[in-house]
Image (cartoon, rainbow, N blue to C red; front, side, top):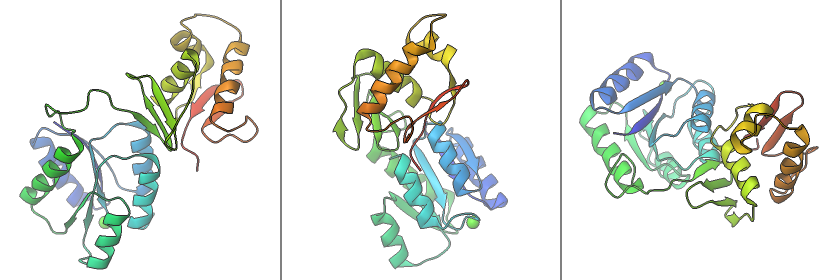
Length: 230
Ligand code: CA
């Protein structure tokens, strides 16, 4: 069914949600803080995020804004505050739906089904064939071989695209140069210059430099990673 991220710091509510969602044959990951949630959505693909607004580290609306900065995954906010003004603001800030605590399992199921239907996720017949990888303002569609930065198409060579798409599939992960050579260049050996040259072309197209990186970070002697700018 769907892949769900539950962001909830209350152990009791969290285990109840996990149990219910797992019973409904969804796959679930769960975290208790907003920062962990950001890390999760940067590393894994979810069909929907259930976001508790009362988290220990970040205010709910801050958490939502930061999530929206790196992903367009549907977000259902779960709030104990029955504050209409705030809920309207959060919906305007990019939340897809909301639930007021305490909510029933049936209510959650209905909201999730509606959100998944709208986003075309959850394995429905009309699910999009090709889904873009998103890292910050970057959107990379591996099947159509198209990439955009902040909505503007990027004109990339085949190798630049392969390099970007490979890194975008593992956002925040330092990929060793050896692995890049093997996966992007299909070479078991080669000199670092090959990678450096392509990285510098790619950087130029992303409008950044090695000295002032935004998305592409080189860790000397270790590897390369792509992550959304802070
Ligand atoms: Ca809470």
